[in-house]
Length: 338
Ligand code: NAD
Ligand code: TYD
Image 1 (cartoon, rainbow, N blue to C red):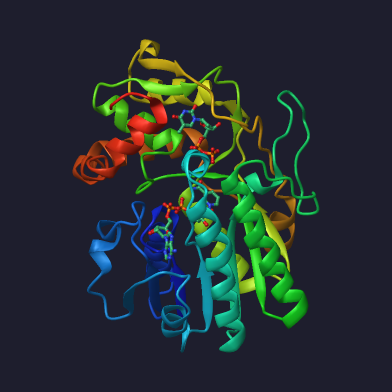
Image 2: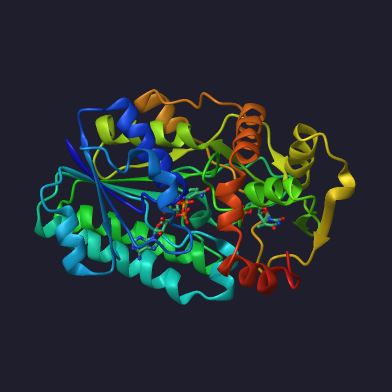
């Protein structure tokens, strides 16, 4: 099989490419990536010379590039996106462009080239915000209720994918996954930001009051789920992908990281809350478990330990990432230099 991966130089995409080359060594992969601030060729350095891997530097919004990349492919796994909520609040334009228009260009290209399979990678946050303390979980039938520009742009993309399946019969599937954690995650998201700040002797900014709840899944569990959906998923269907952990607040997650790194809680610094901050995310992923037999394999403690170890052992990677543009972003977002 020849697979087009979009956004393969980012966090989940690069983990997925590593996973796929390991598990399906006879397949060939094309990675179409614009290399935005979040895309990093270093994530795939070890495989860039492989015969069955091709990198195309380009924008998914560019119809010609999209067609060049997709031609001859049997399937598409679409990760490319602007992916950070706080950046979407600071400047939403790129989110609408890449996440909505870019997805549309890929769908049109897939329709034109009669691509056999299109998997769209989406997120839990398109469903909005559950009340803290409630036991409610979202299911694949829950109505969309996005509340940040990021979530709204991903929701727009999900709707387009579904429309292309219904209207044109595109062989599409969607997964909505919980927050991922693992190697190569850009240190703007809570967990890698916390770990790398702590490794530099700096404090962890926790949005006040720190009682919001997210679910965290180890990235390779997400990659396995996408693989299974591609192999066995029903066309036109959506699958939730989530962890099997108790719920933890952001403050509890940061305390767990401090525990893993044997550092004191005085390293926590409460900062101004995110506008429109979603309170709680909770996915009911019974469908993928019962229909496809998927279950997560890595529990939260092990996921955090493996992630702390990776950032401790790969300091050159994140020190390079945290220079330049990142410093400007940090100043704008947190009102202080790093
Ligand atoms: P990321 O920000 O780390 O990587 C995004 C990648 O897309 C980068 O390599 C970037 O260069 C590329 N890209 C951005 N705009 C592009 C464009 N116009 N054309 C081509 N490439 C472009 O993101 P991630 O965390 O790896 O997320 C990947 C996907 O998974 C996204 O669609 C995201 O919505 C979804 N997702 C992420 C999480 C999470 O916890 N990170 C959870 C659920 C779903
Ligand atoms: P994040 O990693 O940005 O993912 P998402 O917003 O997509 O869930 O944030 C996870 C949680 O951590 C979210 O509730 C916001 C919070 N958070 C902080 O408290 N401090 C921070 O510096 C960041 C980036 C996030």
